[in-house]
Length: 382
Figure 1 (cartoon, helix red, strand yellow):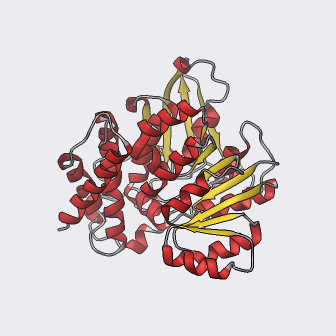
Figure 2: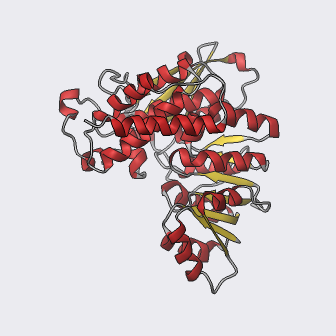
């Protein structure tokens, strides 16, 4: 392909897989960014030869600049450097896989530069959905989902003639490592246990989110913005095998689903090549090898985060941002051994009741609400 790509968050799980996909498609790389992994970013820079790279961490950027001084690659630093890469004139598509709220500002910069967005950063739409979708509409920018579930929904909707034809969305969830456990059994789970996802290999933050099922709550909010549906139209379904990545139901009660082995390179590639399809290195799906596929309702009393996120998007305004900010802070505290597993949902619930929201908000309001939610969590550690 002649397409030129910039990847924000290139050293993470999605970023490294995206580079693999881009290489096999023959795509050129314009820019790469990361938070602080200067060693891996140096390897990527030497292999893929972008003209610009950026690291948020200033010290890491200084090290990388020295390491790459024998090349012509420009090294930038800070969030400003990431935003420069997001708006780079040479790229056609910006794939944003930055972890957490940090992806919001560079995604908006890419939209303002009228780049096609391949979105693997759900927190961008969760925290600032109204801003992002409005700006994308103003600039005529396509936002193509990279999350496996949202890609499945997007693929299943291809060929729909009118929005009124869509009745509901079945958003599938693996159930994480603790499916079937009670609250009592989850009281003393460890980080190591939470990081043992049954199907997917992901970064630590998103793996913990999967264990609490907060990830599915965030994906519910993201789906509302991506597909213009009401929260009540989205049903979360636990599907342990992670073969049916999601499905849509139409008004005639027919259901179309997208299936495939649990490999993120499928949705990454479709976001980069849409509307065309190309051969993929991903393993072929063999249904007989699976034998059976199972589906069940999530236990939202034990895994409270789904209901908390549904309530947040139903309330609207900055409540989804508050839920996300509180979760990011609580997730990090759990990974740091400062709080228990069940404390994550409790702290998100408390933030949603304590931090004020606004119906019509600016980007400054988003960051203020995010900061207030994080402060609430830090102040209420038991």
